[in-house]
Length: 115
Image 1 (spheres, one colour):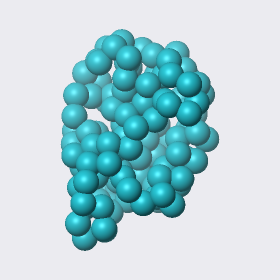
Image 2 (cartoon, helix red, strand yellow):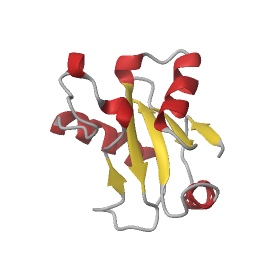
Image 3 (tube, rainbow, N blue to C red):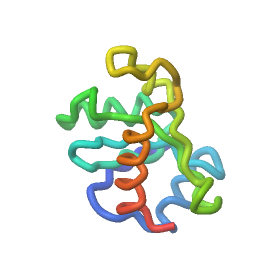
């Protein structure tokens, strides 16, 4: 499964193609909340995370999510990933619990992904 890095807008067609090449209805993703970069696709969030780390992102800025391109605007985004378990940053679960962080991630994704 291919992982693509996006620094600008992602079309729904690109998102659907990534979904079809992987899980069918879902695309795994990692966002760099500082640089506002998305890594989309691949089998594991950790693989996309590593690509962003190799390109200079900082671990503390990277958070995993899942996008369901065919779902409604309210339901298309999940904030769950193994890479989100960050005791030092106050996140003890696969799901991002901090509502401000979730809002920040959603704003970046909404700005970059055309659904």
